[in-house]
Length: 162
Length: 162
DNA sequence: ATTTTTTATTGAATTTTATTCTGAAATATT
DNA sequence: AATATTTCAGAATAAAATTCAATAAAAAAT
Image 1 (cartoon, each protein chain N blue to C red):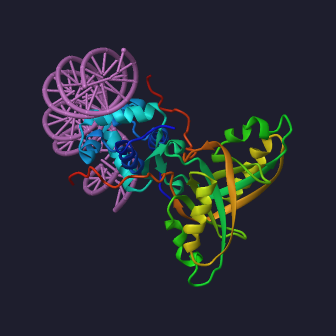
Image 2: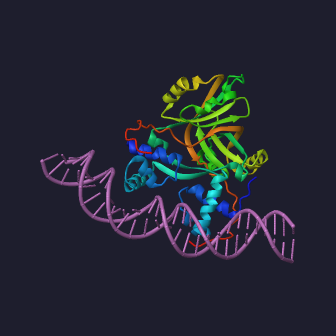
Image 3: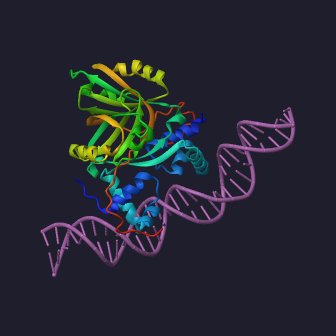
């Protein structure tokens, strides 16, 4: 387990909501020098605590209006996807989880519409070995969608100006 | 529908994988002036095509080892969550989708472990009005997890140095 | 087809920020 | 307590962001 002090947590908290916050802004916010910030951030990146900086793009702007979750039941035979995880390399997929229970995989995928989802299942998913069955859940409306984690901040001990 | 030209798409594509890429780097990559890049990016932000810049933090570093999906069946009564979407404000949740089918909501949530998930369901989820039943799926292993969209680039017409 | 209007781009100037480095302070180790 | 290690601040420098006026290109209107 990696130990993160309150300063690290506040950096993560600020960056989580705004990946492009400048070091000087961070420094002002925490009441420290920009150089110290930079060193902290570099360390968080090197240790893999910060995994990546991503831009969230409006799916509608790219005409990806449909969001679906697909449960995949697969055989556990030696050459099946259960063994080689080949599912994760299919195009258009956002997430693939190996899950407990009857089903084996849960896929999150965006496509233009239901037609193109069917097309994807026929043309792409069908390439995968060992799939026994699928069950598709269509999203009607997304109420919340974030990758943010809950960060345990111990109140604002060293609260700052502004 | 918003029209995005190939330059916009390439900007989105580059920023999607590296939100913090500098304008000058972008400019070099696309063979344009940094100021032109800035204007494009600003426009993409203002139009809401770029929704946000996020930092992905390793959940393990924050001791959030468990990932789960919860299907929630709710009544459609006037005071139920089906009407007020109150589910989305529960702490610790990453996603809430309103889905087609028997169930009403799909929740994505991270917690420390299964104990704390049960605790969350007893202490937080139970506050929500109108829940008829829940079905929880535990993730054993995540093979892929991204928010990236597939961007339709028309090859590299204006390919550049480096 | 021509003019007008709008939009997009450049390049230089300016401001802001990132980055490096050195030494001091704090912390941990022995 | 002495040593080693880590963390931080402050100054100096390099790099990048940002602004802006002028130009070019595209679109719309006549």
